[in-house]
Image (cartoon, rainbow, N blue to C red; front, side, top):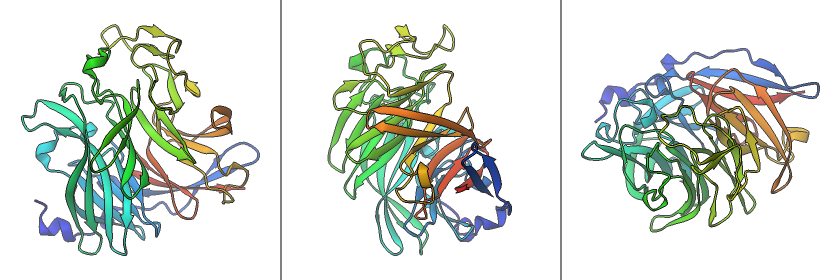
Length: 371
């Protein structure tokens, strides 16, 4: 249980705001203004940026904290502790056990229906799986209650792996969502009957789980544009991908990749590298790796001008935002990468059209164009 002292404290006392925005040059036609706020309290094990959700009024939900299981509300530059997402018995002290996404199913004046995903330790503490639960949160009373399970991954993977959880959520409506799963570093991922729900894209509801696609390594970004579903995912050493998801397609991992194994001792060695022959081709691939995270689409007729409707992808290794222009739903046009000097863990849009990101450096970035 969380102590009364913790529940009542405003964590805003720990925040430090950088008053001046940082101009970041984007070529001749655009600059980005990036305003940074310190939110160190939300870091998971002091190294992983918080999961992020945006509310209608522009305030934020953040999932993380040093224990890796806390939900915060960020409003008017202040951070309020809401409560625990999970018990400490469901995790070990490892940054990879933090929340992977927070999505809003339904929002009232003070109450919220949320869908939250995270890697969960088994009761016997020997294996891990990705889960997603529905929660009720009350912003006024500062409470969060776990309701029912929407997704429990299988198989439960030996605890020595605990990587590539993915767990990104894209809401369809108040009763359904898309969810990505990674391979969790499972050594038998190349045995198709053994992989279960690992490395897939799913449609989930309270009562049903439907797998859409398979063959994904670590899909950390998901976005719907009209009826089209896009996913960004990590390759091994190179071969990061942007994919247009089609039902019943296999996207190749771990049999093919445009990347390369890290070492001969990797948990799995791809059958073929530098190719996707025999499997679904990515729309675009990055070699060397940029380590892609979340995807957003800039809104139409917005502050982004000519860039409106472009896809923006956060990155970890490249410490950049990548702007992607689609010529058609399945053809990528211009791709431009711009440094923000921060590892972008999560990315979203505010009602104003500006972007907001969490970083592994414990910051919130508010990003707007400056022309």
